[in-house]
Image 1 (cartoon, rainbow, N blue to C red):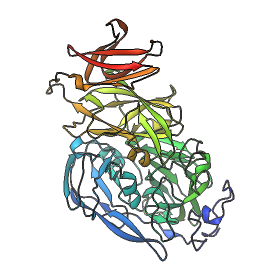
Image 2 (cartoon, rainbow, N blue to C red):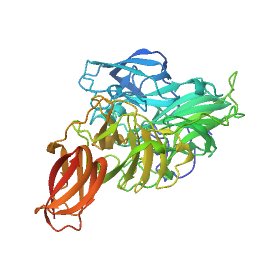
Image 3 (tube, rainbow, N blue to C red):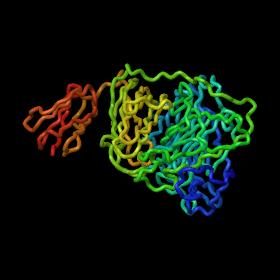
Length: 567
């Protein structure tokens, strides 16, 4: 089959060759030549400068696109970290007018070094980053996190991969020659206008892999390792091969699994990573295509056939990602998959001190929306949750909207316990920091909170970058109970909402609450509930008669008061 021919013949829905090749329909040449896959250089040093600057890149012949990059015209180098080392990074903002930052997605490090929205690196400024490398071996990444501008800056090219190594991974017979049999693949969709400039939005009509349109790569006829990262704004990818061959997942967001999991598809929502092994033994001289099977996504997943989806020629179809040409094996090839990988020790449920419930509600599309967490949207000046340092919690995340959301939390990794009460997929049973929650679905995860915030809160948010910028994000802090004395709460720390309300009343306090009481205007108790130290909750007030009510929250022996109107 010619490299210019359509590499598959299924479910293209008649959009034509321009669509199948992943180019915008205005493009002057329908048959686009394949390009060698760009492999970002590695930086394996403790102390480095990361320069964020603007550039111009020719993705397509004759068209010059304005971009941003980190030490490069588009995207940035792959940063190599070693467990137990100390990283010293200097982030330098060379952009003319834009504030930016870098967030080390998935790394366990203090809030001061996390690079969330409170960290604003102004034009011309330098941010000095220093942290101990604590995570196990795995695939992580970095991207900007300025509030309201994350999606746009990522789209322009500020992002890169992080590979973390340790002794347990080094002891395994795995491919690890970077760029030869260990390949980083950053998957992004982009839209271009007729002048070759990026069109900002949730979806693109062209696929870039490591910033390369229509990429190909020669890989050796042996076992190879692909490190997949969904770096798109909103699109979810269902990844597999054109011949439906089996491959094995060996790692996800936070590191290796206990054993390889054989599959023929891997789904990646925004920010998720997956390490896979593919056996190309005996295929020298042959070729195959890595594919995105958009036709297999549920109707509620961005990139599927959701009716409310913003238009994109790639939605709900199958499209090529990377042509693989198989060459001769290397001198010392890996020829088999290991039977086991590493031993994982999830947090102990017996250590759980608190359970929190988070519901994503509202309505909208992949690119817009009025989505909230339990009615709250992001406010840089508001801490939404306080977690005692060193404790273990279980979080429930419910998606009460009509579109899937990838939930991400900063400050560490979690173990997924179940989806709607059922065991998660085998490849999800390892360290995670992003989980895709489909419409009407509820997931439950367990996490230990070991990192200090010390005035620099951690975020939890939807990792659809469009939704994140539209304030579907809240923040939490950790407090060391051995050094912090609880402040005496004040009435100003109480929030009761909505008012007026018809059926459900929400309440929040800046301090742990032992008991909540609802009184009518005559002071009579009409409702009460024990809170056991929770700082937020809700009450069903649908049966109460219309009128004014007072809410009393007992916290540290102090009674806090609020009021609401029942319609």
